[in-house]
Image 1 (cartoon, rainbow, N blue to C red):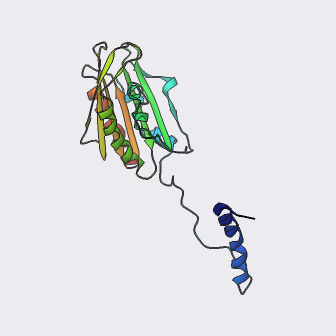
Image 2 (cartoon, helix red, strand yellow; image 1 turned 180 degrees about the vertical axis):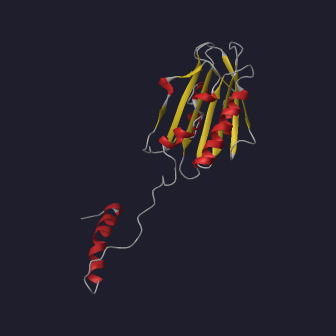
Image 3 (cartoon, rainbow, N blue to C red; image 1 turned 45 degrees about the horizontal axis):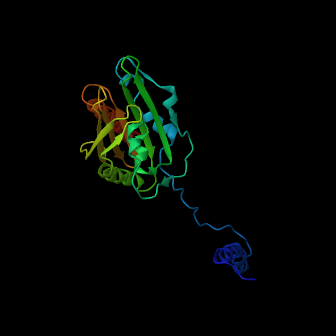
Length: 232
């Protein structure tokens, strides 16, 4: 019978303990002392831990309240990571609270929530994602490519053209990138900031204030970056 290389390897691995036992002069059958493989998620924060690093309600301006529908995390478990095939990104994702997904790289744990002004409908969202290996750095590199590919997109609500401008942002975490979204149909623009802290990426969105949400976005990012550094 012909064996595929995968089957042959499986049989060889199964037969290995028998061969070792036959070579044991004492016949002790002692278990191997070889270490078990290290988990690829070892050292990564869980969603429950990341949630503690999010800014508390006291950080947000008066009149803002958490939106229960946008409050979620991955708990104490990890999810399989994934990377989207290379190609043009979906630029419309920049218009949502989970905008970091536009990078095409997903993490293994996350925590996020969203605060909305009851008076003005201004929005401030915060999220932290944990990644394996060097994937967190890959996210920041992907955002630079997104900025080149996504100079604008159509707002699904106003059906007007949103202008997108992106730039590297020094002084936030290990590396950071900022997007500014403007549209003449909007009362105020939107600022998106992503900052890497080790294997974690902080992503925030803000429409608060009269500066396209820029000051609030930066303060919120700084707050979360500081909390993550203490957690690590």
